[in-house]
Image (cartoon, rainbow, N blue to C red):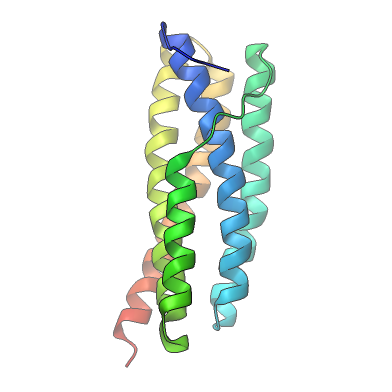
Length: 161
């Protein structure tokens, strides 16, 4: 959609579209991670966040609607790269390490999404798009909760011998 970004609105719309793609990439990754892990509690965490990610996709699509714009599907090379890295590590790792690898991959994606949501919230507020900012804040809260859960599980996995 964009060959060149000339305004803050262009940048915001591009980043919002990239975020939409990122959420779709993340959903696919979460489904893959859920299949790859052994621990039931970790499977549940990934399944729960996949459900939240579907809600987040709907929220981002709603943001486009509120802005009067068609959803843009600007690619997110970052999340695609993170998913590819996690998949590669899962295939290289001993079965006993897969849960740790999955947590690490999930955390990498959460951190990227948190940074993106934070930036977009600031931009939406600066443009007076308070309803858009609120939807993005809802998604950010879910991403932060997922990060906290995965961080705790990563600590548990790191101390298991």
